[in-house]
Image 1 (cartoon, rainbow, N blue to C red):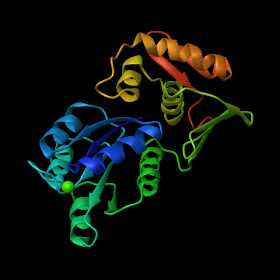
Image 2 (tube, rainbow, N blue to C red):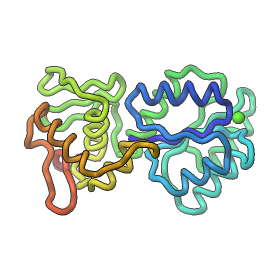
Image 3 (cartoon, rainbow, N blue to C red):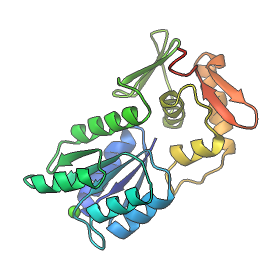
Length: 223
Ligand code: CA
């Protein structure tokens, strides 16, 4: 899952990047409204954390422009503590949730998890496909109850496929959602990671769909 953080306070931006990277997300970052708007407009993020008070272009206007242009990614806004009117304006502009400053990082992490699972149609933090179980809260993966050790790239790949279980996901989509913009992207590496994952989980769980990509598990309706 790939996130965008738009926050002009350098310390807060750094803390967000570090907590979210540690939680297993690919993270891009912007420090003003123009740059943030551009990235959200041109890159496919799974969720965005958007501060409202930004230089060059304020958060509300960034969000309104995205929504006018039919950008549908979930957006979590950061608001000042006592400004209830900011929360209302933000939600009316198209935000999916808000966190008031100052906040505990755990709250951001929990709200991001909730946005991601809702946008992919899951109600719980645990996603199961056959014997495979992913706990998005602890980033733990088990097969038949036994823990599986994954590298961060393997985890990201599996988490993305599990959030989108039953759907064919192309290599290009995987590259776009697993790596931040500075990463040296090469879609061949996806095949390498899929190969490694197949050695750690029951190998038939990830199906290769010729010419299209990969599919993990049946659709939730069929399961
Ligand atoms: Ca700010």
